[in-house]
Length: 118
Image (cartoon, rainbow, N blue to C red; front, side, top):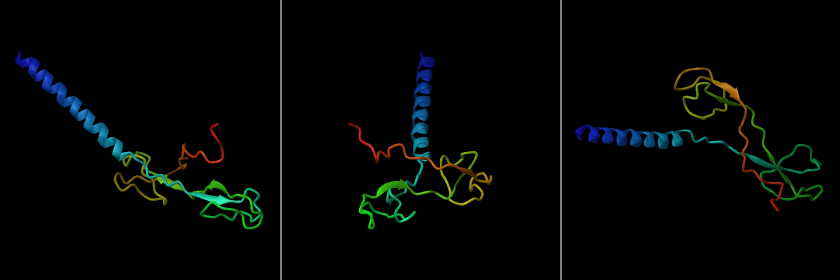
């Protein structure tokens, strides 16, 4: 009977620690993805000029279209010791001291501008 109690207590402890570890890893791996959107005339009558707010083009009066602002470069630790944390400059990882590597920016999957779900 004593062995069954010890076994049950150990099982509960393992399950509790697993749940706590899963919750803490979720908060560590949240990425601060900067989703910058700018607005531009679809006719490009002002070249590559962009605006911070939606509105109308001052030249042709068309609605400005939302476009993603290009990101120069994003760097990340190849060992992922900081989860998905990214940096805007090349350098060394503050945890493992490895060189940061260039990665592609993640695109937001919930950007539904420009189409309807009818």
